[in-house]
Amino acid sequence: MKSVKNGRDGRTRIIEGALRRFSQDGVSATTLASLREESGVSVGSFYHHFASKEHVYGVLYAEILDAYQQAFLAELVGHDDARAGVEAVVAFHMRWAGEHPERARILVSERPPRKHEPGGAEVAEARRAFFRQVSDWWKPHMKNGLLQPVHATMCYVLWLGPAQEMCRLWFAGAHTPTEEEIKGLGEAAWQSLRQRGEQ
Image (cartoon, rainbow, N blue to C red; front, side):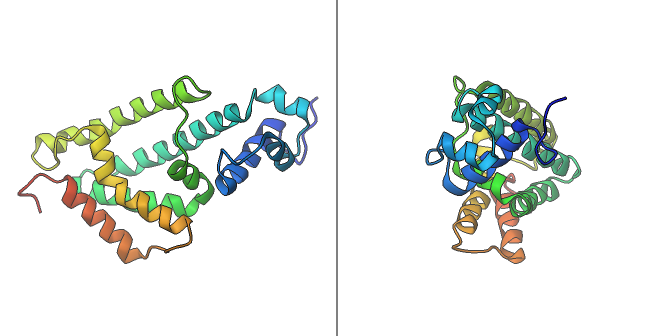
């Protein structure tokens, strides 16, 4: 029977420690030694679970992205109305960031792992699957003349770009968004993504 400190195994403690360090100091400024210290694991235990700091980051980023995307899709598919869906996702994004600030800070501030880096292939595949599912919701509204036929990247920028910038200001301590401002971000997203003639 393996020893489990505080009811959590070494891998879990490393991931939890990495979340705290990466969100507070950034990935590049976080050292392997500080990761081990934060998680309270030995060198041997660390290398039993992970090959490097980059490996930890790749696994953590993939886990955070998966949780965010699942929650995003659950929110989106709950809305049959195009405008309601667009605006609800903006509100969801801001709510999720407030409920999971460490995870959101990593998604907002750090670049995703590249395909050749640990976790990169998984993140790339998760993004493809995610965009396919968003597209499945989007296409009927596009065909009905409600939403613009935009590329996935442009869709993301128009839909959540301003909300992402608001999150950056929020995490930097420069501004805490109000409910009215979050509602305004949703309305702005709708105006950016609707087809002309739609109100």
